[in-house]
Amino acid sequence: MRRVRYESAGGPLFVEEAPVPEPGPGELLVRCEAVGVTLPVVRKVTEAAEPVPLGGEIAGEVVAAGEGVTRFAAGDRVTGLCFGHGYADFALLHEAMASPVPDTASVVDAVALVRSGLVALGALEAARPEPGEAALVTAAASGVGHLAVQLARRRGAARVVGAVSDPGKAGFVRSLGADEVIVYGADGWGEPVDYVLDAVGGELLTPAIAALAPGGRLVAYSSGGGTVRAYDLLVGAKSVIGFQMARIARGKPELYERWRRELWRLHAERAVRPVVHGEFALEEAAKAHAVVESRGNLGKVVLRP
Image (cartoon, rainbow, N blue to C red; front, side, top):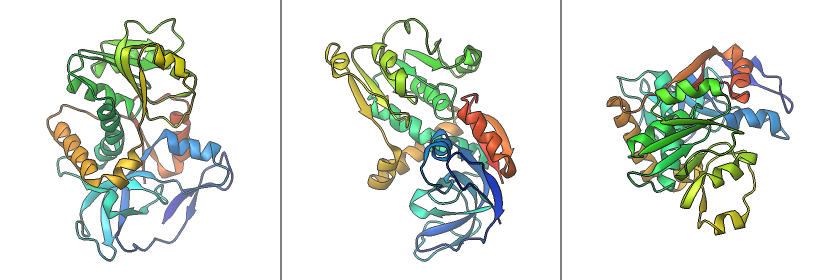
């Protein structure tokens, strides 16, 4: 089979031939038909001290099941998070991380919706939204952000603000349901909001905290780091909440499954629509990474092995 790998920090990425892996206990061997490209994986290539497997979101058909698997069998269509080599023709997916793909959905919809949607929905839940509140979503045109905009509106936000890096993304974000779009670096981010879903971190934390109304909440789910001054929280009784999907997947599988079912229901009702920026062949993985790294994507970037 083909597999994308790299040998030193920063790449380059290359395709190699590798043996098809054997599923171990609790694992599914999946023929990959779509693979999601995410900023955390891109950053692993550019920042990790040692090469790591390119894992992440995959969707495809179960080819074989390991010992102890009870929920899936060969021929089933699944999507989920792969912790090993996912940029490949075949990948191993642990049963606990797998979700069935409805017959009405494509594998591209599945890989664009489930993992990114889970992060968006989980971050929104962490913000404890109340109907009628105002929401702000950073990286609003990204794979997660474009779903977070739609979910915030679905949860009753009276005003949804999208924050983007490029004014050229404004039309796309408004088409998702955002009332306003602001660009990073602008002087002031308009009227205060009740909660911020932040996927960027770093220097953007300061204006994002400043955009909160008194008592507002910022949910940080970015791998971009950053520092928040305690005084900036104290004076407005504001709070920062960290959200990590892996903690939910590993520690609260029943909640993880409930969120997955909710996403598929919303998809079936056409209440949430995943948008795919572009599809790339496995051999074009470097091009796909470049799009995500430059933050030029409008929606999800997908590899098609």
